[in-house]
Image 1 (cartoon, rainbow, N blue to C red):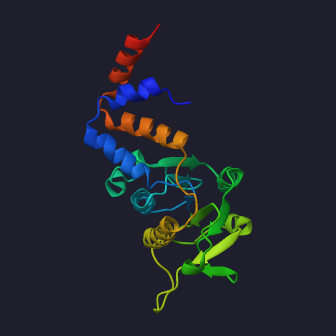
Image 2 (cartoon, one colour):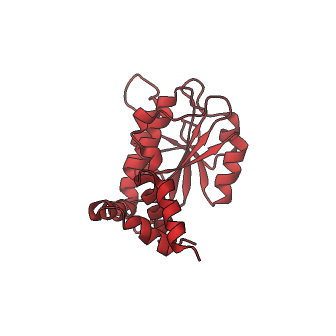
Image 3 (cartoon, rainbow, N blue to C red):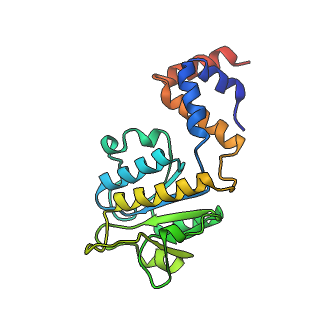
Length: 220
């Protein structure tokens, strides 16, 4: 449960404009969809996908780091990692288990014999969209556990897009449709309060000193 006194204390340090921006952004955030990025070799692509999630309103990003390095290209992400929740996993199976336990369908973003075109995808159910490596695509483990397959319609000679471009197209399309729907996709009140607290902490320089002062003033 969020400490409302602590939240009010931190938000009291912020400008009214900043607090208003938090509320405006939170009104368009969702956990109805989430994204999972599997062992992407070029880290700037992971960062770019994260940025697309932040821009279009997806709050949870899952990063599988079974093979490659564990860092985010901050220049590409443009501080997106401050505003989205990044869940890191050491293995594909761990990520899939976690996502399924939260009630999401596993959707592999890859052409398949049973695939679905982007505009035809059913947005009513909570879904996790998996994006694979530039070299080999999604792993067999993801494909085996997938509840559905999604592809972007293409009309040219090129058969694939860069992962960051694919993610941006898919996320923008699905979020635009979600906003126009009657689906209850918004964050809960408790989730919004949690994000307000996280974002307030991320916005305050020298937060450790501020927190120490708070606990000193309000300790019994």
